Length: 263
Image 1 (tube, one colour):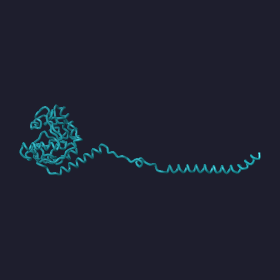
Image 2 (cartoon, rainbow, N blue to C red):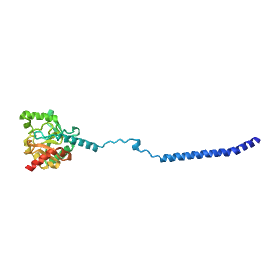
Image 3 (tube, rainbow, N blue to C red):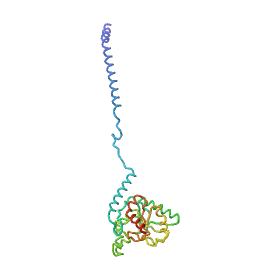
Image 4 (tube, rainbow, N blue to C red):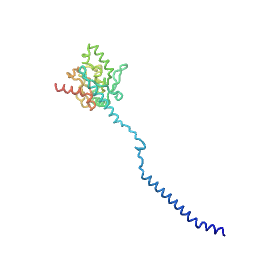
């Protein structure tokens, strides 16, 4: 009994002290938790733009706009050059962006003709509108590289005897509207073997183009007695149905307007 009595005497004073210490520890722990939660909520939450750098990917429209701007800047540098034998300078269009508008000739002579997208789509509308009226318009020659034009021009020099005489019928390399992808030669499908000849002026296709070509953005590049001094080409048409095309042919358009004023 004395043992338990002594034990009770000792714990009577020790137990309150332990309980007080335990309370202080629990209160301290609670205070620490409260402080940590307060600090966590007060800190700003990192945004995705800070923790993960954004990757800006240009849209297709922006990319296309950049390509068009670069093409126009290139064309503006070229058009600063003076005309040559009555022909204005033109830069080559981007063939990777062009659309095949049809094939011409057969066997080893067959070739696939291309135009710039907006000119190609306008041509398709024109062809089907004409076909609804029984007129068969076919493309003969679209985009033409400077290298190809050089071969054609050299052949004309051999036939005509001089560059000046050759330029009446064929543009020097670097000066052909065909380089742009916005000009082409057309023919009447009902009159084979008369392509790129003056007989085209007597066909239903030419008459239809003369009446409706502008409705689709096309105009005759070299009418009779034009101020550029180039021979009459009833088969050669250029697309001027967009701001981009108008800028490409700005100098030629100005000359064409002056020609109409004089006539």
